[in-house]
Length: 72
Image (cartoon, rainbow, N blue to C red; front, side, top):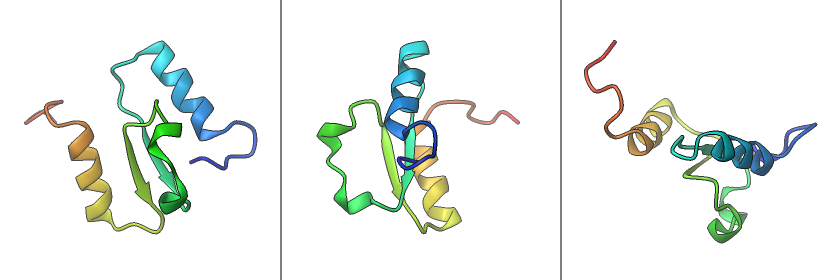
C-alpha cells in the first residue's frame, strides 16, 4: 500500500527489488487511477481497493505465470 504509517509502499518496493530484483511487487491501493506507472518503476502490478477475490487471484496469476505450477 502506498499510504502506510512508517514507510511508503514505494520504499518497500524499492527495498524488495534491491534484495531480489526478480521478485514481483504488487501495489494494493485506493489511489489507482491517480497513479502514474512511470513514477512506480519498482511496481509490477497494481490492484485497486476495493477488489474481489477473483481480481486479486487474476493479478497474482499474471505476476507469477510460471511459478509453482502444480505444486502444493
